[in-house]
Image (tube, rainbow over all chains, first blue to last red; front, top):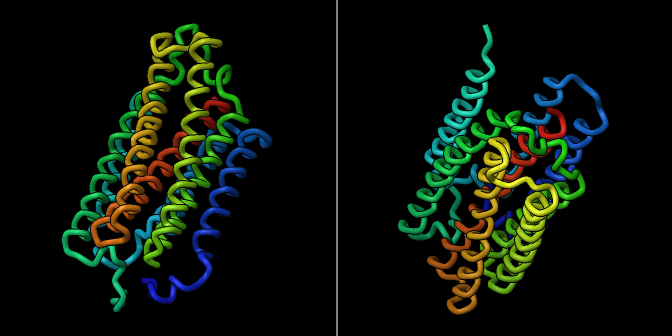
Length: 100
Length: 200
């Protein structure tokens, strides 16, 4: 996606923005938990969504997941990992909290 | 989408790009490993057996400092990858050393946290199912970070002795991927363990 020659000779804005966004999202998550007294489910949903956003920032801004050189296989491996993670974690919680 | 005419050095050999792809597959497997530990922790979170609960234990200041150390180290490690692609050994090693120091700071704080839990709060691995899940999940991440520190020292030594070659470049790129991945795992520990521990 990105032209490397071009990327190399300029200030690393992508990384600085990535860092700023991570710090801001972390502080928002803390603020939601400590200062806002939302219902528990709402709080948990918001912080999990913020964490997912942060994971995407790491993958896109720092880990170059979207570069050329075998992008499809790379995204497939990570997407499959995330899929299994969601099934295992959410599935376990759903089963254990299930009440008729 | 379009092919660039400039291939980064770590991808310049077929072996290099295959090993990097292999490492991504490994990271996919690591996500699955951690997902098992997360589900155990979350299912057992309320099983405190009369011992300390997450609200008793977690200190906002402590885990925020740990989080910031790791977030910033991920950033400095990313700057190292940029220097790698400029074939600048000095810049790369300098950023890796900064990353290493931030990682050591993180591990130091985490050890301090664990020691406080065990000695002051009497919250050990055996106290309750909640604490078993906690120490195993957070400890596995800490073990990964410790391993990453040793690994990064080895890569730095190789870079200093051999400079940026297709082989050392691939190694430096992969340790970077590993380090960023540990930051992703920590973000979920921060959210699912520490922040959730303040809510539930």
